[in-house]
Image 1 (cartoon, each protein chain N blue to C red):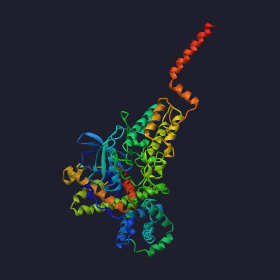
Image 2: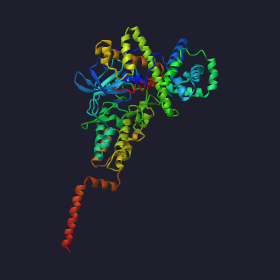
Image 3: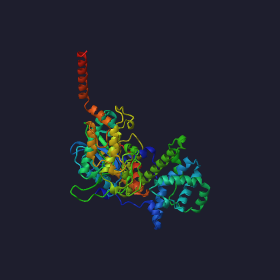
Image 4: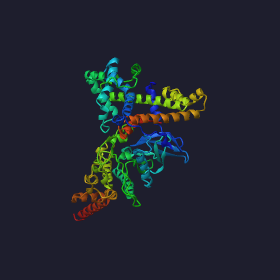
Length: 245
Length: 342
């Protein structure tokens, strides 16, 4: 049955951080950091116009503060989306930067995810945001959301790569990579079929499978990053809502 | 971790959104609209060779509240076989886990768009009466719609009027006397723009007795309060009153080149239908549509007591030709008499 193909919903990070199980708490925080550290870093660089080194400190300091002050436990999904809440917390944190810097030193053991700031800096160089519109809260929200979706998708792609490898479907992942991730507008199913010396129907089936799995994985991660079913539904629509056939 | 360019993110977003129809009898044609719970696509039913509309849930939660609501909507539609209610053909789960149902593909326009070209008041009122027919039928089957508004009414290419989007419907009673179906707990409040714009779908949640569903401006006060347990057909009558007001108020339709002025009788009908206290509204949709029909026929309505002058004016409007003929006859007769007595 199709519904059986989907794993049981994992705990929301919001529920997990409130758990008494330390392992579950740590996993939840890792999940959150993995999805948010890049959007946070890039946002600090653009919104607060901080040099790279400062932004790195602030990013790590912000997550330390989030843990220390139990910001996630205070989050109420009825009032706002998690990412809006985090962005507002981040703004407030940066405004109290000096105080935050002191806290950062105390909370240095927080982040478990390897933060590749150099890569984030490289990505930022190619970011498309109208500098003139930076003061607009709408454009900042949009920028933060865009980076958050990028981060979520990147994690889901990575999960899909591992998932394909486990099932010895590396070729399927390569097809997915070539067609959906390359951004090449010239690519076609026929071209891929010819490159891989397989029938076009195999390309169609492989891509259909990979997209289904990608969607499943991305939604699974998204569910973890939402505080309630309602928020999950709204975010799912925001992430996959601009569909067109 | 691989960096995803903006183009790659857009392509992923687009490709992963498209429902996977493999293993079904349907072939995807195009995206049509976004509804409260999911997206409506046009598809080809390959077995019957006809175009259908597929309403597909956004998220793969086969056993979740949304899936239950979509399934419930399909079941509600299945029991409402009426020319004014869109028929459902099929319901199921796609291989990507999303619940869907197939319904008749209605080629036409939403009422709010359609009426821009309808400038005659009687034509608008006749449209309204057909909406009332469908809603009255649903009420007779123990179903209330709970989200009646112009965006949820389609007018087909041949003038057929169809009431759509029964996702918030409440089953008041089973036709066979069984218990009422469980009501959705959550109430999601849509802004009118959100309902009419595929991209502006952010819903505002309000708390109350349960999750509340409806659209401000068209939702009855008791529905807005989330008083789900006490909702009955009169809540739909409120929405119909608001819909009637939309249809007959020139000021509410700035784009239209309407040819009539505000009418006290129609205002009274709207006011009675949208009374804050359900007890002061029409007792049934039939009573509301009867008043509108009487207005169309130039007869007195139950919503308003006329003055003698208004009665005379209505009498004149109803029998204009006869009155003018009699008046002309009397004038000619008087002139003849005057001429011969000179």
